[in-house]
Image (cartoon, helix red, strand yellow):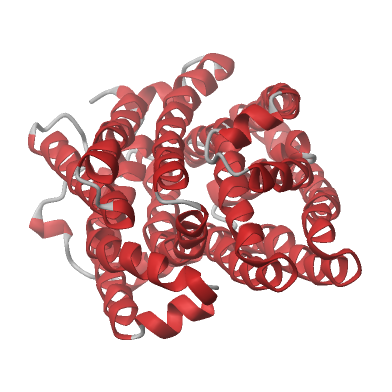
Length: 451
């Protein structure tokens, strides 16, 4: 239970490795299980199945964003409270996270069932895609409250310094999903429904894994009923800090809606399926920087709360350096094995050939995306909710959407993929300016504290 105190003492480089690698490993396994869904559906259900997944994924992501935003917003508060040795505040934050995340998710699930057809059509279930999307969505929706609860508690566990436990909380259900996919999809010949049931069961398993962790008492945090009391002030803090994470996830869903409709208009079901493949590969390529960002947020929040500003600055500068190096290597590997990667999901040669240039456009700016993610996580860590939200919206909405519309209007499907690269360049330039300014402010705090 003393794991959290290491956040203020360990060597920064070692600490980044210690906190980020388990987070990245957990993300990697989660991505692999999403890719497993895509792999088995692509090969045993077909192109329309891939298109169905492409439509449902952003809709599910929208609901998941509740758990992600509440989880990461509260994690920053918990780390800061623990850094200031205020365990009571940390537990109150966790209790309010659980209340609002589960409550909002249940409402979202109800809306999902009641307006199912309208939502699926809005998200791009056009033509023959609809029945495939519907069969998957009907089942997966039942597991959302368990998933958002797990996302909240997992972030809380990581914020205390239990990085390995947080990793296993993602790995265990993901491995179960990978095992169950071929059993349900191929062995029981259940197609899209089989993939959905495999995922649903994995959500339950992830939930029970974290329940058992808390019952064993190996944490300073508590889910006791005395902490499950709604406090408006704490809820406001959680939602404010979590707004950037929510915007990040919700914006991805908005982009997916737009892309599904634009791609269907210019290229039909195949182009929608291409987006399903490329989005999975992008998740695979970005899991290291997402893990690094989560580790960075935890370390910065704790040390900022403890008044150790030099450690905060060192964490940011080292995080950017390592992120750029790792992402550069990933881009080279992805481009070198582009055809092999896209061939994992389908035997359709048209789909493979259309996926390759799409992948190039989406991933070209990956090395410098590190700067944008670091800037947003840094703002969250320092409880600068408005800054974190703005940085997220700049990349995902303010630049991405106009660029997609403009480029697709003139160059069709090809322009759609190229727009990703240019919108990333512009938004990351803004993030770099912001980060440089904030690090100067931090340097002044360091000088004052030294005096």
